[in-house]
View 1 (cartoon, rainbow, N blue to C red):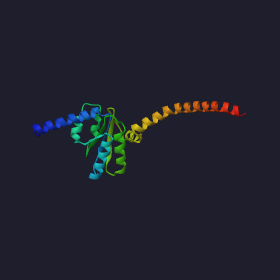
View 2 (cartoon, rainbow, N blue to C red):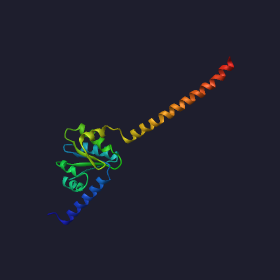
View 3 (cartoon, one colour):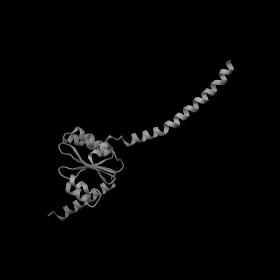
View 4 (cartoon, rainbow, N blue to C red):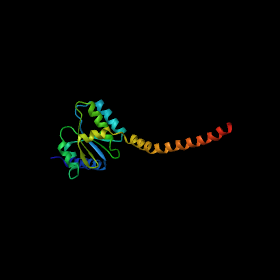
Length: 173
């Protein structure tokens, strides 16, 4: 039987984990076995750079954290070594970074994930991973909006240039 102090610490960990998951717009649960310290350090640095929280968790504590929520179904994936990566504002970053790492590793695997409180399968995770980053998507949208305006401006400038040339050509004749 665990002591009161240990039990209280575990309750606090479950509460913190539950809060992180509830505040996250997306998350990926992985089996991290077989990676080296150097690989883990690089992976964590990549995740930090993308503002993604990553933590190794005990399966029982994660199970308790999702109990009674829409993510309760992740319990079936909680065996072996488990780590969770969550993001509060970027839907794609955890999937993109972890999927890229999993593709280059023989032992590191993605178990499951979630998006806006809904469990997603590995096919959806791979589809998410292929999406460009938020910044690239925003730049693309801006270019799409900007293209017609730029074309209109060039057409107006061509008309002005043409009208400016006509009187000069008539003056020479």
